[in-house]
Amino acid sequence: MRIANLANRLVMVVDGLAHDVEKLSAGRFSPSVPAIYGRWQEFIEWASHAELGEGDPFDEALLLSPAPEPRQLFAIGLNYGEHVEEAGLVVDDPVVFTKFVSSITGPYADVPRPGGDVDWEVELVVVIGRSGQRIPASQAWEHVAGLTAGQDLSERKTQVAGAAPQFSLGKSYPGFAPMGPVLVTPDEFSDPDDIWLECSVNDELVQRSRTSAMLSPISEIIAFLSKITPLLPGDVIFTGTPSGVGMSQAPPRFLEVGDRLTTRIEGIGELRNHLVAVPA
Image (tube, rainbow, N blue to C red):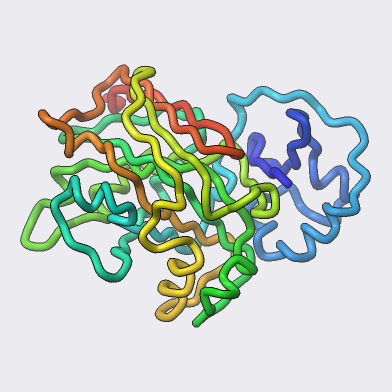
């Protein structure tokens, strides 16, 4: 199943057509996208038997983030071996930080470019559909609503400024967490732990890998996080980026106003974000 946030209304997307969930369910489910995660099991059971009828064509420019208001937004750093190598670091346990919810934007939104060094990071994003704490890795996928595409945009100077790194601040400027274009349930993938993902800047391919190269797969990430904090319906987890980020290129390369950033993930679709000047 593929769901989307179409102009702040929950829709199911089938064969490129939108089916409005509130209308289709005769009001059983509201049009609110954030609210559906709190009723996820009930929703997917209903959706699996719903008679869809004819869908409606839609303007993809109206698509917003399929997880627009998570109570918690986690991000995992240094989760691909080649990215660890290019960063010149050593990693044992998952590296965890957060991106503030105010950084979330849609799949085709313009992103204001602040000062500093703005970098790209293609990431597979997990959205939680069932709460839990101390979740065993063997049961982790039972807590996943679906997967979507994301960009962990990063301003590198802020990220490393001061006596201690400021990862969360450097990765939380407005628009620094594009997500979408749809949320796809895990059963839609032949193997949800082995999905290709890639990123291009102005049509130049800069990142490409498979999620099977993750040092900590999704099930282990969920188990690791939930040892400490309960995971809640609608929570978002950015799962890490592969090698090819701008700061590790020789010489380093960063995004500039006017650049086009394209993020593609197998079975999900693509994000297309333009870097624009910060409004005066």
